[in-house]
Length: 76
Image (cartoon, rainbow, N blue to C red; front, side, top):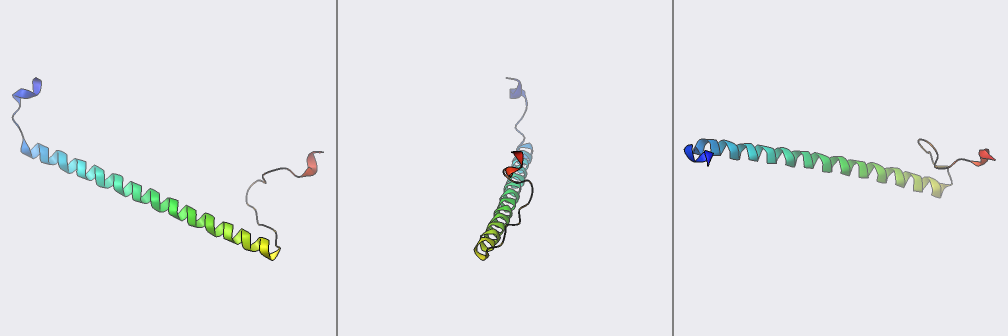
């Protein structure tokens, strides 16, 4: 094998382990950020839905954002 000629370098092995540890920490940080964003989005969605439910109980119209889901009877 080609690698049989090279002596074992414990320092290079330590650098490799450090690199793996840094990569693992970076991946864990990205995962934590992703979970935090998802949790914030879920909280925002829940607040919006609660507001809509309260408005329905009070008899007020929903404040919709964006395009309506279906056209009104204008197409006839």
